[in-house]
Length: 391
Image (tube, rainbow, N blue to C red; front, side, top):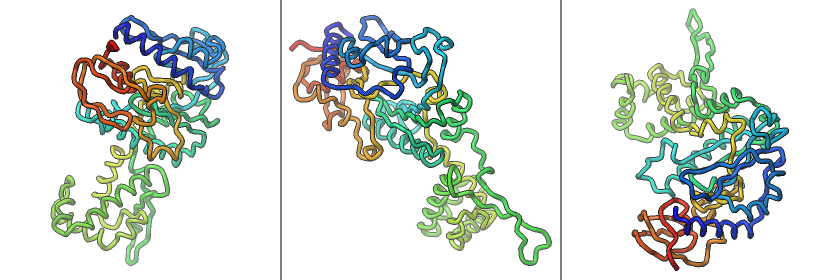
């Protein structure tokens, strides 16, 4: 990045912080703070081990330093400015989740646009929130658009504050579906049948919550899709499962047609052929319904995370706190464009052209000097795709 570009971004970040009051996180004085300045050295240099007392008034600090990135710790400490974690004396930590579009299995890098990546990331966010709300019953949660490639979720329930890394690891494993044993989702009951000398086992899927409910929802979607097809197509679909031939497929289809209500109630033992297919279908639920979080972020009790309200130095977009009722309609490439950068144009020298979707518009850019809306120019410069041009 050229000095003219760096100086321009520093100045406009300062203007943003002059116009916006940033709300600090709870217990702000107990947290470590860090930031990355606009430097002319290769790479980035993190300044950390600061307390809010060291920084002074947060708004004044941001206006004066106009940092490229700003962070605070998930952890709270007796001495947050100490230069080692031991000396800080850990008191507890928020439970933080990070979803990064670059790391999602559903994202194809080089093919998906930035907008498409962020939309897929929002879908993954909704799956994560389902776990946090329904399975864990957390109540004090805050959703944040990271300003870059995804979302953060901060959980501040008192019950999680003192969890050590291993306990947090178990939460990670649960939402990722790691080590899920499907036998644990199935209740087995001995039933004495008419004319039987010995009881038989009846297997019922636990459908009231958790992974059992998710597996059942996925299974019922599969069953209804099969039943909506004509017989030839339904049998062909059933036979696409490993180890399912024509006879087993016919038996399973008959069982599904005759016992749809029983299956909806959780009975997966309506026929051995159906039971085999049901288990295969349910195993797919982990890939479809897990929350692909960045695992080290959640297990790290000392993690630094972006400050909501600040600017992301790699995009020029706002790091935004979001209310739950905003999520369905939230478009980060519109809502996170700072109003400070809207309403006038600048000249930039594009180094890496192509199509960019931002601010509700789509721009196709060629290399060389171009005049663009300032919010787009800042986005391109922050991402290393352009330098500041001469006005």
